[in-house]
Image (cartoon, rainbow, N blue to C red; front, top):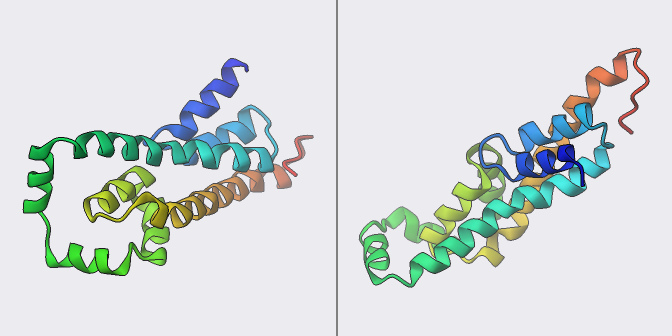
Length: 149
């Protein structure tokens, strides 16, 4: 693994920027093909969700944390819990607020990760695809020899 590969992995897993920075870096600087940036970047971005899940599990063992969360619950949160997380709201929110914040909110609403894993992963894949295509467009029209496909 080279220094560039490690940089790509750290950028993709980073909650600030994440795929928006890692995909163009991988394609334009490291000359990765589109499929590799998508296959490698999406699971690396999902690491944020796993980190929040592990951290929340540790915090849930603290009774004061549970009491704090219970005091903050509202009827809106109760409706979200009743809907089970909602595929489309989770899918649409993930690219805008980040997978870590979506997962934090879902834990607060007591929606388990298994209920929101698919919409978060698909949203990350869609985000990576849009960024990859946007990164490839200038190369298609340039006279360079780099081919993103």
